[in-house]
Length: 354
Ligand code: PHE
Image (cartoon, rainbow, N blue to C red; front, side, top):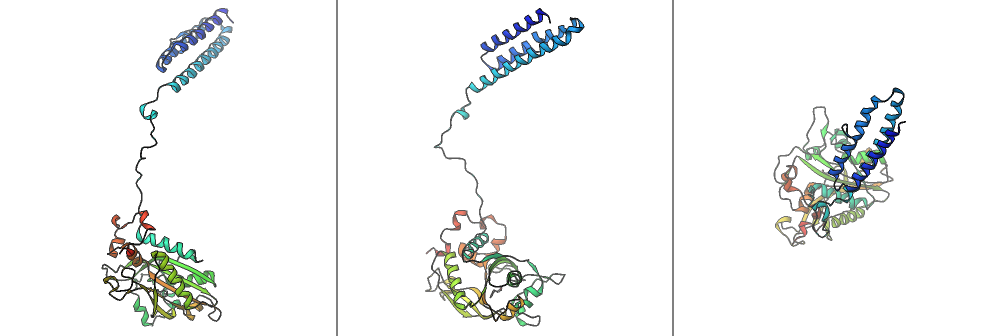
């Protein structure tokens, strides 16, 4: 190994250190580095001169030059990192004022029906009800027969049905889920179903062919009408954040006996009569009753051992009442103005204003 080469390498390293010490900017460092390590730089020339050495010395010389080169490159990159870290920050990096308001993040809104679904699920699950669901395309067995509505029964006319080509139908109510839940879980049972239903209707401000229903079913030993009334009263009071009065009138649904129409005291006028309640002080809201023994039997539950109540209501209608939606068509229209802001969700229902 030649003394000469050793000497040269020591000199380049010293020069590198010198340049690093005096460079003030990253650019200056970059230039200095290429002057030393680039092809035409000192080290580059040393490498090029290897060819002139005797053959047996070439490998070792090349290795030595490369070691020195790597060492010098490391020194430069360290120096560069140090300079970069110490460089003054841009104005944006330098100033952070924590008292300034943050950027405005756009927030989503919620469909009134979704909001009411969430609220009912919350209220009823606190009473031990399980949220259950079923298919929107049903057989006439589940939609009618099992619910004590045989094919010849005039009550079938009560539900204007969309029949499908394959003899199935679009469910006209959520009640078929009563049978499905009984089949799946047996008794005792507490389930609610919130879902879409379909009826062959002419659309107007208060009728849609696609709407949401809310169904509930509670089966146990010794369930009575008193349980039904208590659950309904609590459920409505929670939903409207207001003590609600209820009353039962006789009503006919083939799958309950006795059957009722449950009215809620009008929250707008407090019962004294107003246009919203057609001056009666009451709003018709829920179909309900004690589960018919034939329906329990269809669900493989023994009516001698168990009794239960069922209720069903138009979820869409409740959403309209709660959020002051005047036209049912706006809810299925995709019109963003029909949506409600999140903070409206748990605030006082619009119906309570006044
Ligand atoms: N399914 C009935 C309807 O669509 C509502 C209802 C459900 C009535 C449960 C009584 C019991 O009108």
